[in-house]
Structure formats: structure tokens, C-alpha cells
Length: 479
Image 1 (tube, rainbow, N blue to C red):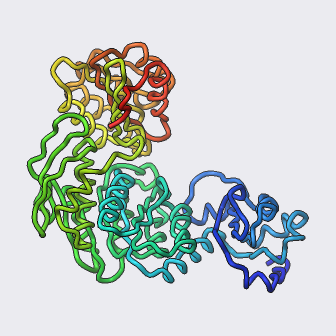
Image 2 (cartoon, rainbow, N blue to C red; image 1 turned 30 degrees about the horizontal axis):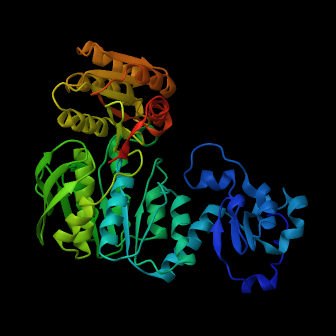
Image 3 (spheres, one colour; image 1 turned 120 degrees about the horizontal axis):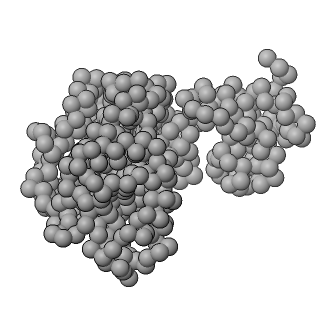
């Protein structure tokens, strides 16, 4: 068990805590620093090796921390550095678990609605669209910073409520990548009033073993919502639609292809960033002009619209909000270059379904005579079937109507080889995104329309960076 924990300074209980941090460099006066270590990460579903932050406790105190929380067995190990701060150090069995428990306590004291969103793809875009719709109704919305959707980022977001409890509602994406019930853990921190399920795709199969296991992990969101809550399910995804069986509350569906409570009809693409459709809800219909590209993003918009319906926002107001929404960075943003070519930057993530959806948008949005180029990065975490999935995608790309393919890194070579075999002669492979950027910068010309899409680990944003170094944007920059 080790030595008894030092007694805490009595005055510590009367201190006003201003914020919570897991990075000693951002701690300010009055903050509490949580020092995470490898056993904490391993116990809470994080893969890989992590630094032991206990060694940064002294610098956190030097930056003004009121207290620090460390793993109990770390104090003796670092006693020489920590001794003089011992009466301001709280020792716990698991720092991440303590961090999450604190976040749950803050959530309970706040006690307002939580909308939780999960899916194999589109979580961040759907979260941003949902927050935008709710904000348009005058609500103050707490949302994850970037994609802080795991067992550390989620409580970090929730703990902002301790600093500012004036938020009316929280819209929080919840992610998972391992079999360790990550979404169920997040639901215990903030049980959702509304649980939004976007899709189940063969992502993270590498760790979960099968797409059926991915579906079970995603279903933890519906299982973890408050009794009597509302599950919002994508009617176009059979695995998501089946989750109504575990919903202890109301179920509302959205979809494009299948019958649903909220739907999009009369979809027309009028060029990049100019899609129109009729939004249909149980409260009526409204016309939407949508700036995000791709059928998958219309689906994300319908998820957001369904949340708006649950909170009794009328269709016209939902449509106005969706019509004013802009794509998040690297998620379908359109860049117009002065040299006369256009780039769709979708560098944040990739999987076969999302890639082919964006290629469909590319093909549909081009004018006759425009060259259609796809820069496709290796798709990660597809499991044991990854080679076949890359080859199937390459064949589909060859039959999609594009003119040139650049595959980037690793298994993207399978995409390129399959595309060539299927008849797309102008297919080349680049070892990394830097090389792909060099190839594209040399060959791009006026009239070209280029889609850049890849998983985060492939860093296809470097292709965009290479273009920006060699070519200027139009004065309007982005749509």
C-alpha cells in the first residue's frame, strides 16, 4: 500500500478553484492539475505508451496550481521533487477515473440537457451542425473542442461547466476505438437526454474484430441515455436502425433513402457548396440551400435537424440555420485558386463509404471539360479485410468517372493498382503526402477540380499546404 497519504493543507478546502488541467504548461493560478500516468491510460482504454505527468507536478505548482492529483503509487517514486508540495497533493488510485468522476459531479450540479453524438464517420461535422441549429434558436451551447471525444477530452469539455455554468445545453460527440466500453464510460459521465447515432462503418475493426462488434460498441450510446430519453437513429443504416431494440425511450429516425420521420427530398447539386433540398419533419417542410458537399453531409444535416425538431425548433428556423452553416476546417471546405483550379479539402478522415460519397460529389459538381482529380490517402483501422477494401475502393474509383488518381502511402497502392486494372490508366502512387503534393503542384492546371481526402495519420493536409506554397488563392479564398 505504501506510505500513508500526507495530510492536506486545511486552507485548500476553502480555495476557489478556477479551472482544471492535464497539461502543466496551461495551469494558471487557482487551477488543479491532474497528473496522468501510463497505468491510468491503460486502465481506461487508451492504446500506446504515454509520458508520466507526475514529473510535471512541480512546474504546475510553479505556474500557480492550487492543488495536484496524482496516482497513489507515484508519490514515493517522486518524493524528492514532491515532498514540499505534499499538503497540496491529492492521491487517488486512478487519476483518469478521478477526473471523470469530478466531471460527472460538475454535470450533475449543472443539470441541463445533453445531446450526445456518435458514429463511425461524421461526428464532428454533425456536432457542429447540431450546435449551430441550437444556437440559432438563442441557446448557449457547450460543445467539444475539435474532436475531444474520448475519456480525457470529454471530461475536459464538461469541466468547462465549472468555470461557466450558464450554458443551456451541451452537444458532445462520443468516440471509441477499443473493446473497453468507452462510450458506456462517457455516458456515465453525462447520460444523454438525446442520443444521436450516425452510422456504423468498418472503422476500428482492427481493434474490435468485426463490424458487428463496432455496432455493439456504438449502441452503448442508446443504452446509456437517460430513461425516457430520445434516440435519433439513421434509417439508412440497418445496423443503426436496429438500435431501436435497446432504446429505453422515444425513437425518431432520419434518412434520405429509407422512410424516416425527418428526411431530405428533391436533392439537387448546383456546384460545390450549392446543394438544395426540401427538409421534411413532422412539423412541416422548409427549403434548404446547403454549403457542405456530399450525400453524407446531407445526412449529417438531417441528424442536426432532427435534434432541432426534438427541441421544438420550427422547420423554417432549422432550414435557415443549415443554410448558413459552413464546413468545419478540412471537412469539405472548398478552395478556389487564382490559377483557375478548385480543391475540395476533406483531409480530416477517410473510409471507403465517405471517400466514394465525396467522389460522387466531385463528379456531379464538375462542368463538361473539367479534369477531375482524386488524391486518396491510405484508409486506416479497417481491420483484417483492409487490403480487399482498398482494392474494392480502387475499382469503384475507376468506374466513377474521374480522370486522375493519386494514391498516398501504404495501402493506397492497392487502390492505385486496382484502379489501373479496372481501366483508370492515369493512376499514380505517392509514398507520402509530401510527394503527393509535389506531383499535384507540378501537374495541376486551370479548370481542374481536385478532391483531397485521407485518414488523419496520412496527413493529406500536406498536399493542400504544397499547393498553397506554389499557387495563390483567389481573393475570395473559400466558400
